Image (cartoon, rainbow, N blue to C red):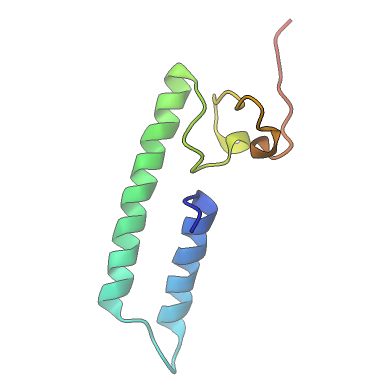
Length: 90
């Protein structure tokens, strides 16, 4: 499993689909546990984004580089910017 925001979304939507499955529904307690853990992961991502807004930096890779406000592009890793171009002041 890649530990990214996109992967987290995928798991959360799978959990939702499991709850809606009338033939084989997901256990409510298990769904609650998935959502609780996801909430903790999201909270840590919020702290990371806030930190990057203050000091800049590269981030952990959980949120793709091109989507992080204030993040500096990773050296030698142009794929992680999702095609975003660097903007510089002159």
